[in-house]
Length: 208
DNA sequence: AACGGAGACAACCGCCAGATG
DNA sequence: TCATCTGGCGGTTGTCTCCGT
Image (cartoon, rainbow, N blue to C red; front, side, top):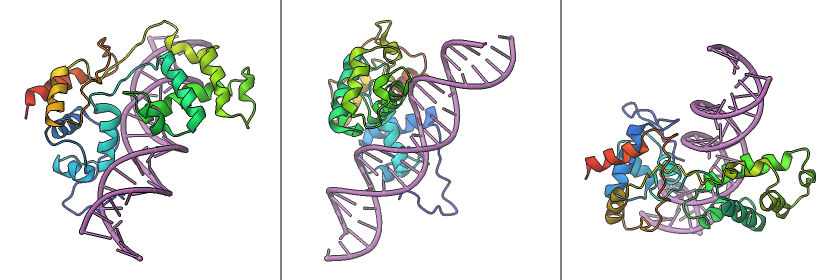
């Protein structure tokens, strides 16, 4: 689909982890032009990436309202309830968890819940015909490892968008589809993110 | 202090549905 | 009406980090 035959003068489509520079280009471009038509966006922005890749990067990581960090117990419960209802409809589930992406929920499910299901001591996991409703045992009862993320009681968000609400306003101003009230919690935790704060402020400096 | 394994997460791939010409 | 393009979704894989030995 997005694999266009690359002409001799067209550079190869880049794959793999995004660089800070690419992120900046994407953020800057979207701030000025808005989202949409990802393939042409990728070309116009000068990114050697597929439109898909740009879209994914934006939705899952760069979007200002993306909320990162540990899933709260409330969210865990909600995820399990919704999964029981809808199964692996991650995007549908994600819509009910503001700031969470389908990818994040999917990863959460696979790493935390599915792993828990497979634990030998966990009887509820032994039945292959088990409905996902059964999973509510894992989350609701929070018997063991599954809740480790919140055992310390800290909601350890790691927002890429660290309260840089100037940019948020900027984005929202230039592209009203940015939800104005979807800021992540104020506490910041940058530990695992290479200067996203820097990136945003650099983007700010770039201006239009 | 070094190594290996497990866990977590970012990113890619393939498929499908809807929109458009 | 058909063909093509784009966006979206779910599944899977690759890589990095952390922790235990």
